[in-house]
Image 1 (cartoon, helix red, strand yellow):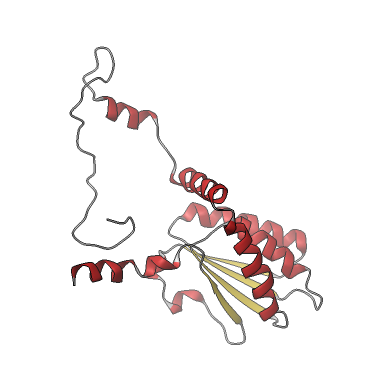
Image 2 (cartoon, rainbow, N blue to C red):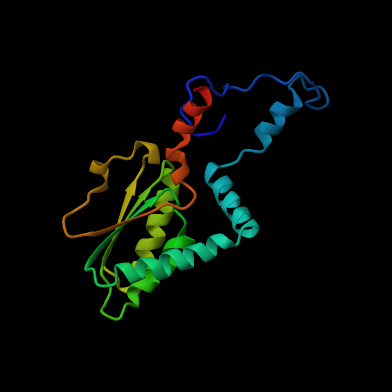
Length: 191
């Protein structure tokens, strides 16, 4: 099955079943796979960062998409708005946001008040991104507000977004929108 889906028929088993191979070392009764798991502990954030870096190297078009979609298209559409609310549906990538903040700061008619709502189920990603963007906005003297939403994209509701009248609203989803379709795709397999 696919991680992150809500299929009720699949559940990971925790703790993992004991390995049938022994060999945890001289005199050890512990299976080697259990010892290896104890030795190599990975932080989820480190794994996410490493995966992002590998993906960027393998598919350099993502950086191109950031530059074209955001820097050009988004800025052209909302150049004359005074309050801009951008909702990031799961990216949480500073490589996306820092150049965009710099582009907003250089607008000829002055920067708008920028609100960035980042949706992620990973609190550490939100904290890191928030600190980075607030620091960058202070350097640029950009009116800025960061709103972290620690929820999965699937659980997002309009009430959580704090949308106000008069804001230009844009949703940005890079490599995460498909998670909203996962349940429907699984259901189609069974029909």
